[in-house]
Amino acid sequence: MSQRKSFLLRLDQKLWNELESWAKDEFRSVNGQIEYILKQAVLKRKGHSAVEKPAVSKQPVKSNVEGPETATPEEAPPIQEQKPEPEAPKKSSWVGFEDVPD
Image (cartoon, rainbow, N blue to C red; front, side, top):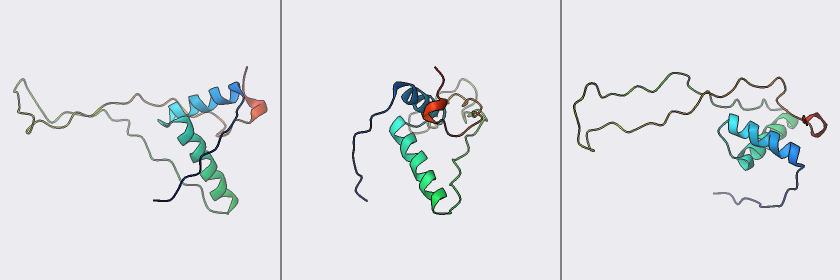
């Protein structure tokens, strides 16, 4: 596993709020979202096409268990959490510091 560099990053509160909202929409932490954005920027700068984010399934998860029968824990299917559908993407994929709404 490669070593990861830790460093302090100071951000304006408005920019932080936008990054936090964007990260939440894509089910990432703010740190993970910033890392994703930076990786995409580096790939774009090097002339590579940016990696598409994985598609989120919009179909509800269906249970394999039908009826009121009970099953032992070994027989029961695993419980899958349903995540809320993400909001429609904003017009711009990047919010510049000066573009952050008040």
